[in-house]
Image 1 (cartoon, rainbow, N blue to C red):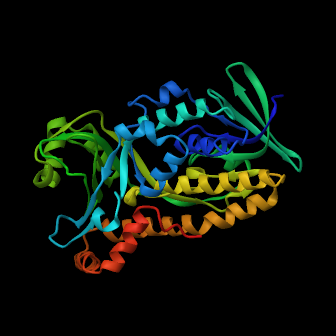
Image 2 (cartoon, rainbow, N blue to C red; image 1 turned 30 degrees about the vertical axis):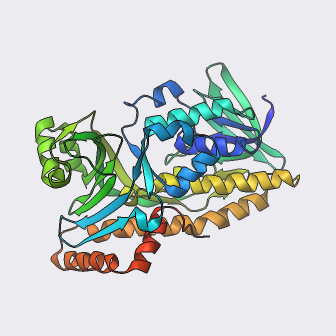
Image 3 (cartoon, one colour; image 1 turned 30 degrees about the horizontal axis):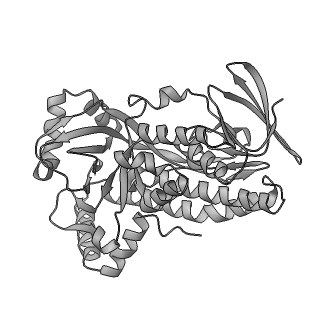
Length: 396
């Protein structure tokens, strides 16, 4: 039996590590359990994706001591261009109106590395890698987690379990929390390209019949590509000859970026939209993709997870500061109430956008292009969408 912690975080991915840091930065005694090895997760081949950090998420990473290491590798998004199948009617967001960049693009393996180093530097945080959770037992007095480690079976104790173990969450299933949603017929081809022309820190999202094609600015003349298509087409794009793949990509991007070349592997990720029926159970709170999975059409997945984490860490810190049980009913009730509306709104918005734009119905296309042009001419509405993209309009 191990010593008792205030919180055990199950899951050492981006959401789990960032939650561990937010808790430990407040002096909370926190243990993070992860089934993988950090050395594997920080390799570029492990995860080919990039994360679009909204301005609010970047600010949070700065507060918890992570941004300093990430800054040399992150590229700001100064402008966003939204277009529908390359039509002349577009929607353009300018950072000069917003007063700051909309966000920053950073490779996931670099984000994992920075988060892991920060966890190691915090005295009240500890990480148990290669630890497979086998069972969770709760009582009015606390929670116990049974897990297999490299040293054999161990029992860990805490007042609160934070399930940040992803869309296939063991914590959620163990608690019997229902999981509602659907798998999309789409998948995203993700890769990094080099290109002849500079991107000028412009992020482009072109809505095509099969799904959006996003080009996200990285350091140098490089961009992260997220090309969403039908699952079978996405698989063929991944296996396609490199020259043919680049030729097809250039057909969409060449006017802005010129000739393109692959700068690494092509990855394919299936897309889905799921939501937990509730975020809490006795002594348990779900965060990140253990609670919600959404279409990447707006690039807000990790940013929502960060808001979950900030909320939960704040409530735990407040309870401990008052000498209360950080895993008690009141903390869990307030967490559920605080995060449900914001997450529901974003899930509905991303699902609706995908349904509206991922088709070639002539009448809908005219409506979409007219709508984009109308929003582009309405400064107050544009500012509202800009603030939402920056993470400054969380619903409470």
